[in-house]
Length: 51
Image 1: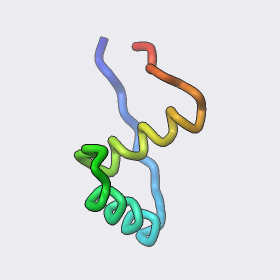
Image 2: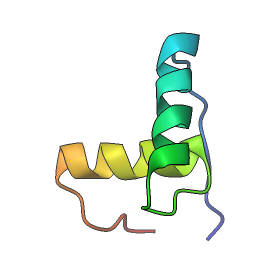
Image 3: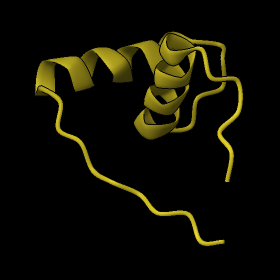
């Protein structure tokens, strides 16, 4: 099954804060999208998305 994606908009200020966190973090995030996806899953209590 092909995964579908959607786009969201965030403020430039928030994007900059995410970028700063990713640079300083030792968590190994490769992109904003990866960070945001994990943050949303954690907030919603989802451990793994079902395909």
